[in-house]
Amino acid sequence: MVGVVSSVSSIKALWETRIRRVQEEKDEQKRKKTRGGATGRLSVGVWEDRAVLARLKQKLQTEDGRLILRIEQEEWKTLPGCLVQLSQVHEWHIHRTGLQKIPHFINSFQNLLVLDLSRNGVTEIPKEIGKLTQLRELLLSYNRIQFVPEELSSCESLERLELAMNRDLNQLPDQFRNLKKLQHLDLSMNDFTCMPDCVVGLPALQWLDMGGNGLQHLPEDIHRMETLHTLWLQRNQLEKLPDNISRMKSLDTLVLSSNRLTDIPPLMEDMSNLRFVNFRDNPLSLDVRLSCRKTKDEEDEQDQEDEDEEDDREMFGREFMQIYIQESRKRASAVLNMHRVDQPNDDSSNSE
Image (tube, one colour):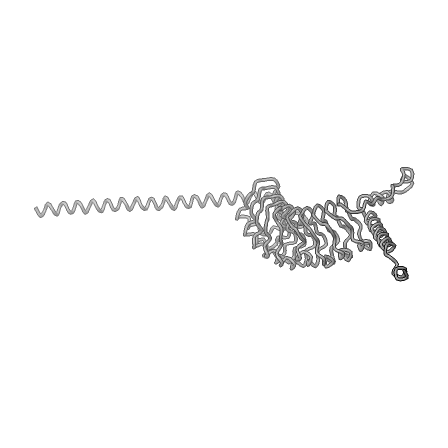
């Protein structure tokens, strides 16, 4: 009986050993299969990156010694991480691709001079943008940006910034004034109701477009913008202009069409630097007409330069502004004289 029990135990131990070995073999095969699958997926990922990178390299162009990445009207809603391998690129021009996000690895492109992502669906400017200290142009018009991070003020070389037609954008960080080299700023067709003080404080600004916003007034100290030569303010809700606008000695282009202006400040009469000014489509209180244009025969006697000057007079409104101010002063003087005539003579009143 003891021998039988011993025999059964030996057989049981043998089968348990066999079962354990079979299970270990299965587990090992499973582990190998898993490692093989991961390796396979990794291999696929590597080949996909190589394919995408090769496709991106086809988009590279060299112009004037600059390496430019140019993508137009293709679907690139996101930019792949393998793009960092092209960190030597100087300019991005990516338009109408449906791009939704500026990648956070943008700070890897330390050589970037121009970042042009106009007409996409970008909703955010990443804080990493502040690392691009060599960036000169940032063009993000016709996107969906609602907020400008203060880190943008660290782009110390920025000369041109375009944020037109982002619709809901209505403020800028105060640090924005630190952009000491910014010359060209386009904030048109957004939701600003006033000109930000940080914009007035930009020391090098020469060109500003805030047309198509909801501006209700201009800052009284607008004359601080000493270098500004072009100011577009069309299609806003301005009802008056500050007198200090006359102290903007560099201003030669001023567009104020389609506002709610009822008057032109008399001090603007001395703005001889204005070359282009437009007051069209404003409810001005005086109905002022320019003198009649010369007859066809008289115009034929003038050279082309005179004809161009005549066209400029009608289109730009410089002469209109001067005549309006003169007429306004005449009427004010007439009203004052009439008021004096209507006043009773104190001496005669006392004698009676």
